[in-house]
Image (cartoon, rainbow, N blue to C red; front, side, top):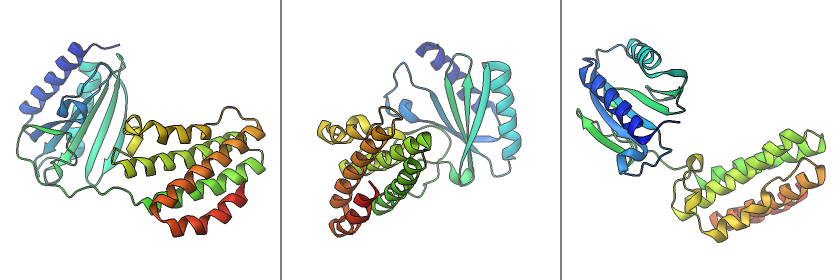
Length: 245
């Protein structure tokens, strides 16, 4: 396990390397460090802006070699947003290091968690929250598959689908209460009464009767959240969704 001091030392080393790399025109802290909210479990989040003339693939490859050679990386995985690649490293110490390699035009704040260290950021289009109606649609889609999975005796798939209904209900609740909605980041900020209503959707075993019970509870809370978004839509959905269980 890494210590906060070791994490800070590595972060400082990476920022120094960014300043020395002629291909990089800017760097920023992102994530919890950018807003002074780090704790002992926090990872390292950096955004790097690349010169228009820089070859992104070459830069990413060089920094990847550095992470394995100098900082005990054991694996990495990528995520993409527009032209920016987010390379996520796992170190032997269990520290996670996220480095975003952004084209010059995409180097800028996407959220309040962006603390410029050097360079000139470019204003970025705001990321919109998902549509509540779209989340309702995904909820009933998971519910359809929960029904068929239970009927077919595919108990693990059934658990997955029931949990999918619940996940979309929780996202709806996060949007309603104005807390972060992605990756469960705002769930601890929801009112206790809201999360208590969702607790019965947790699947406690793979017994068919238990799957049906949790599924019924998930339909209940999906309809309850839907009614707060669009009461007329909730009325239309109630018959078909109740029929599933």
